[in-house]
Length: 427
Image (cartoon, rainbow, N blue to C red; front, top):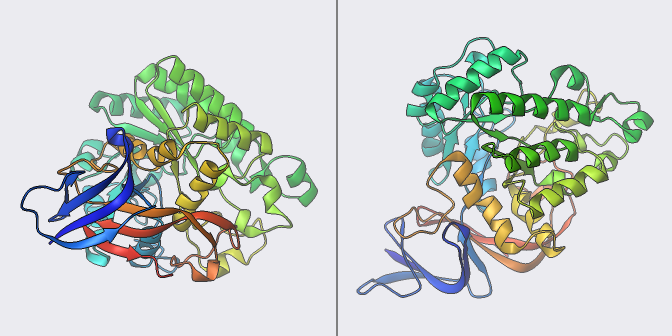
């Protein structure tokens, strides 16, 4: 059955496209944009007039909690939340239980995506070291052959610089991308929020921005030595971002992402011990937030991600220091990014690029594009739709987000995966 998406503004940065056109789908593939192919039997039409038609969003990092933490969430519970956010492809970090350090685990992640909820593309990030213990290198080649699209030690940085250098040299010899949580673990240890006036007033142990600056500086030196291709995850410090900016200017093959919530929230949003603001890396100063936004403008930052980490309610009911870090971000990834468009931080075209083509390029996968012949993974959203976010109406099992009651402009109306409509906004 062929489908026509009619009259939408088609934005496809992967093909440098931004125009009003019809999009034609058949057998799960995009077959044409613009002119209707001869003889095509249209059985379904989606009215996209006054709406944006773009590739399905590619989320660089989301923890769906399966396997290992199914009491928090599962692939089945989180997939509808991804659809509601226009997300069709998710990269899964390796800190599952067990870790994604064997081909069997890489296959399992991909199979769970198909078995539990057909209609979501899950791509695993392999573990750099066995069990993420920073002692023994994983079989990166076997993991790559099993479908891993990059390698990371998740939030457990490899402390020994000599071991990290050898890992990068090995990855460089095969052209693999290393995803880095760059931080000095000794400076980070014991901290629960940004170190500054607010942490002092609240009496909470802080994580200085120096922890990230030192981690980025070390890893950039190792990248330069090894020739490794590296991606810096969830950058939160303006000074650390400056180091990455200089490295890119000097020709190092490095990219960086930022989470959507770090572009809107600061240390002051922790309020009076609001555990919804307990995340790693922490919300930092207003100066850092402004620097991250500047990094979007000059493209030092290549992608925006959700860093989705759903928790059960009890995990956030403890004291701030004892509560579990992380927030639920699948359903706010696009709305928070569109807020930046509405206040003229980035253009709509560039925003979509950072949510589709750029993260797909970092992962090295065929996604984030509306090219004819590619999978019909599509997000349609109304850029003028005004609405208020309500945590009780979230589709994710995790309701842990500081965005409750936030006003948004721009909302997903349809999500298609492999040509099948998997989500439609119920007004």
